[in-house]
Image (cartoon, rainbow, N blue to C red; front, top):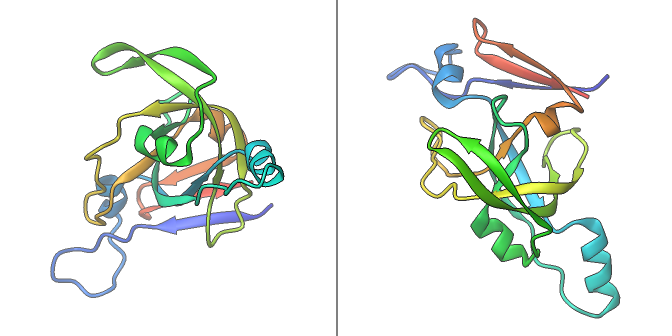
Length: 164
């Protein structure tokens, strides 16, 4: 069973490259992702001689509180993917309706397989930056993704693992 391990990259102020376990609490379980049009749409575009929109790379937060994964709506708009439905989701601010889109998520530089999603929420993640790392979140990875993996969150070691 292949395993993806990620150690905290946030360092103690003024320290050299020593592990800093509280860094995981600061950043959360973050992975690099690439959001792409679904394979069926890419094939359809290629067959009709149209260009396939370029993938969007960024950071995603593993969010065990989310039952469905979400992608920043600006990423979805860049890809030109049309909504396939509407979902009412519970948020900290109360219930909200959000559009649902198909998309493909890949994990560059890892052995984690790409996953085709028939349903991802389009969400406003603008301004959701990753403390200590910089860069904005472009996705939240919910339990619909985690059902394909074993997640180990090792707080004392400042690392998490995804086994698949």
